Length: 173
Image (cartoon, rainbow, N blue to C red):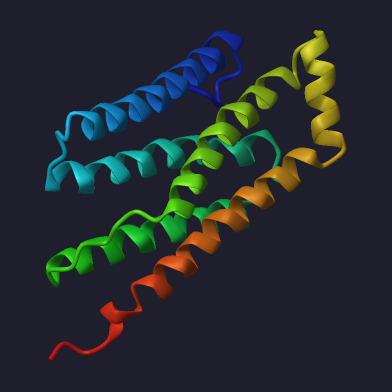
């Protein structure tokens, strides 16, 4: 819906994305508060996060490949796919892979950046004050540098997962 030319569809898609992000947060909060977690939930919640962020990130290059280059989106995808695979592999080997604090920071950074970037993408075409600010953010490369920051945080957490879980790469005895 986001890549439609009509403002109503792009706005609706951003609203749906924001609602999904907020409900994901509260779902995790409620599960922790009431200790209602399950092994399936521990696996599915991060997977749902991946699908949500993938849906948002895939739209960005359609706004501007100069500001949101495909290589950065691919780095984010590959890290998330790798960590999900590592989590599945660890589970099959009987190891728990706890979510790192930096990975939570990564998720927060992505969930703040994505709606913001998607809104900028909507307003750059609008002839309103927010459109002027949105165009300024794009012309000054601020959006590109914010994506680079999110990409760096994302890649860093992938490397950190490898380091923290390096014992998984040793042969089983």
